Amino acid sequence: MELNILSKTDNELEVELKGETHTLLNLLKDSLIRDKRVEVAFYDMKYISISEPILYIKTDGTNPIEVLKDAASKIIAQCDEFTEVFSKAANA
Image: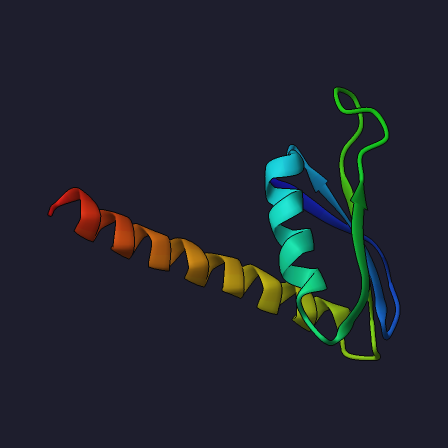
């Protein structure tokens, strides 16, 4: 994965995520829109096979980079929880 910050203000962020698909972008978007500090979160993939996805975040004034880091941390925590629960079930 290659990540490029296309633009950033105090409350907005546009990030290009080269090589990623709907799978990661949907996870990030879902995590972001559940955050009360986020006013808008969406991504765009103009042409699926030839363009890179761009994630857009607008916050209530909170640093959008910190908000994106928090969203990623929540996803990691959910994956860790799933791994633990699945491992217990698989070994039962």
